Image 1 (cartoon, rainbow, N blue to C red):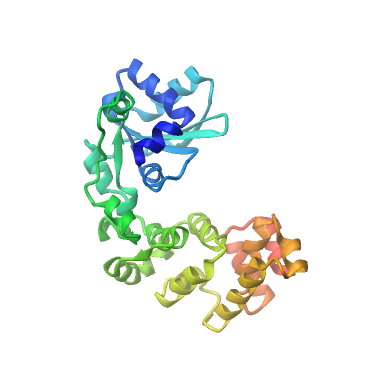
Image 2: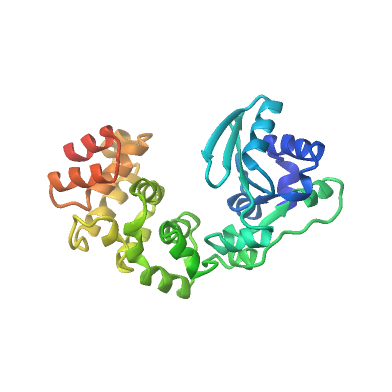
Length: 304
């Protein structure tokens, strides 16, 4: 199924990169990785791809952008990550972590994000040779079992934002969280405080933007994680009922005044749900500022 999806809906920029990597003799050391592989297995078409490559990823990305006349964006100079954008498609090229794709995958967050497709194998498939996926942590099995599982607890400690990503992917995909993974998230939840607030807010917005985000927000509260994000709120257990009711209203097209006012206004929907967690306007405003929300978002939350 995965490779049939690829063959039928070959990503525009991936086709270009396949040709480029072959001409530049890079194809044997480049891999599609992460979420792109996950989405392909699920049969989802994606316009965003991640390529891990052994070598200087930034120089390779610059050369590729030049050849296809695309836009080059430097994402992370320290870790060697760059983005190329063309015709509403984008591809992120990153330097392979360690000496092999197996080490690279061992450093990732979830099993479902720790799979890779060698570009050389993909090229062979287009010539009708049977391909394979590199899947050392059984991510494909977890996809079919609808399970969120971490690669290792050490990886959560290296980047505690991954704790939030556990719940975000569970909510986004409608998967259950493996018991051991959930226990690790609970035990390390205090480390969330060490993460840059901008990164926390980005993950939080992904969760709140879901139509059925209440289930995930409640899980974050029950597991003791929400209190580390909203330290000003105190006990928010009672206010979660309001969060749920507001979300129900926003999802109900029969409530025309509310539904029409917020339809197509993604930031307002997120802010309206978010503000239910605060007991007073001043607390909501100071928390929104601390979370680095935009001026427009802060003003909307305070006003509402």
